Image (cartoon, rainbow, N blue to C red; front, side):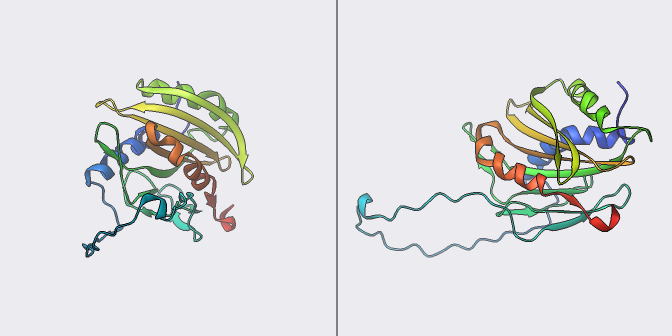
Length: 227
């Protein structure tokens, strides 16, 4: 099947980089540009208080940062903004234009850890006459054909902020058996460029991240002056 983006390496990266970045985050090998420091807090003396007397703390609802993060694509030098989830931070990875991950990794049922993350990468279409309909009809089969470990979950087309977008969700199984749920947005910017943004989280924690990952990716916008 013909590729849709001009840079096949980038296209391959789109399919696997989120999983790779997740592994890098979890192992501490990623070139993250955020820093987290923790100091040991003095422990308080235990209090004699019954469970009924303890205040009930409401579960925190995931939300996005109020201030958008700006980034520029390597291909075309296109400028974008995106709002990342609260409690996440921007990282650095040469394979993509943008990546951000949660500051705290999730501990899975088998005691492995995985850090939920989002990335974005822009590229040119492989041919000047590539239409959004080409992504609608070919993207799913191309990606699944390249990565047999991926299991298709759902796919559909919509408009986000006025931009034609194809959305695909898959389950991606790592060699160690960990199942990662990934949602990928293919934004058809114009007759020259597309940008692909992918969110990942462990399948067993997907319900925790689905809403905020979708909201974050759907906040992605190209700087109006360049349109």
